[in-house]
Length: 110
Image (tube, rainbow, N blue to C red; front, side, top):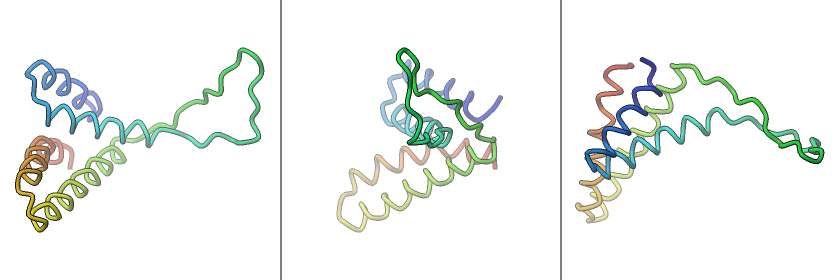
């Protein structure tokens, strides 16, 4: 099973279990992967009536998805440290929960 498929499956499970921090985290990672698939649209492209500006999306490899996941984990760690240093242990704890939710994916796909 690919990383994206596993994330989507676990997202459904987390939604059913009503785990808001896990749901939020998985949605963020999936959105980052979706954003990586986006391609630049040529500004000279002018759509004709009834034709959309849709273009084929870029294919993101499994390795690139893992890199995106690592970047999200690094961002969470950095923000957690900032919250701890800023005297916001409650916010740091939420980020710690989000990190715990992503750790199994890093271990499985690294």
